[in-house]
Amino acid sequence: MNRPTVIVMILATISFTVLSSCGPTRGNKRGQSNAHTPTDTPYQVKATDLSGTLRIVADEPSRPSDSSTTMKGWLFIKGQLIGRLPIHQDRMLVPGTYEVRAVVVAESPQAVNYWTVVWPEITIEQGRDFTLNAKEAIDDFISNNIERQGINYARSPDPQKQVRHITLNQFTDSLLSEASNDLPKEWQSFLDSPEWKTVSGTADRLRMSPPSRQRVWIDVPNELGGSREFDAEQIRLLAKRLSPNLGGWGSPTVSVDTYSPPSPNDQQRLRAKIDQLAGFVHERQEWVQKNLDGMIKQLEQAPEK
Image (tube, rainbow, N blue to C red; front, side):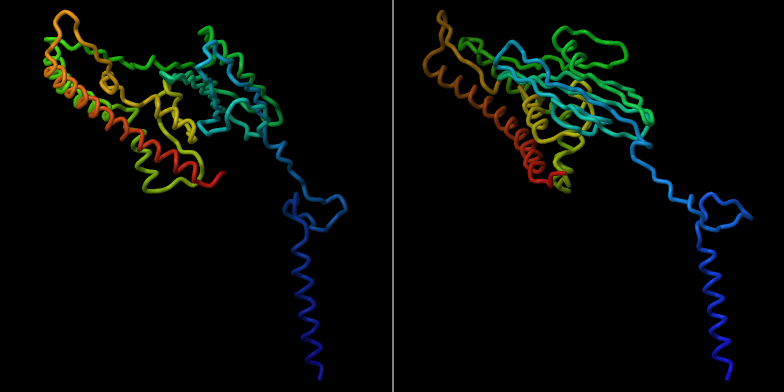
């Protein structure tokens, strides 16, 4: 008759032992009691205790005197796009060394040029602030070509946008024959260029796997801003920069030699050849633009993150 009572007593003993072993143990050493005391409270870690702050002061680049030119800039940390200038914000970062770069693009009706300013080693310390005043370094480089110690700089070379003018005369036939031979070689040289290879490779990758957000990484040389994340607007500017000029044969101007003009039939024949060369160039320029427009569309349709 006493068996049920014995079972209850055993279960009670087991419960007490388990509960006792689950008490607070933080800071206890072997052999010390686990008894709870009023001072034994959880230690709360704040994000600011484990990070440092990068205080960014980056205004828009100064406006050029030429009203037809627009200036746009972007800021990156380790190649990751932070945003379009101006940027005034504090960013908490894990202590360590960071590369910060500013890429400024000048767009005119004729060309697109790049200026790149890189702070290669900004050290973020725990619990400390680091203020980055970017505007002066950017403006000094663009306006006065002043380079400061500890900062890396790059500038894009002037684009080779040749203007083609043709005077119809007795030498035009040989000129057009030479152009017919040279244009396919110039086109192949463009396709083999490192800039186009990396951009077209990125376009192929996006077609196979659409982007998950509105930016994509492209490994371009420092003269074009360096390896970094591109958004749709940066790709639009890159497309204008990379559009193949191919010797200016896409939009040549034509005049007739006043001293020894070809016959009307020869003029018509020569103009037809010029139109064929221009058509060759237009087809390839449109193909390049179509590839980059596809990238722009995919980024604009991606989720905004």
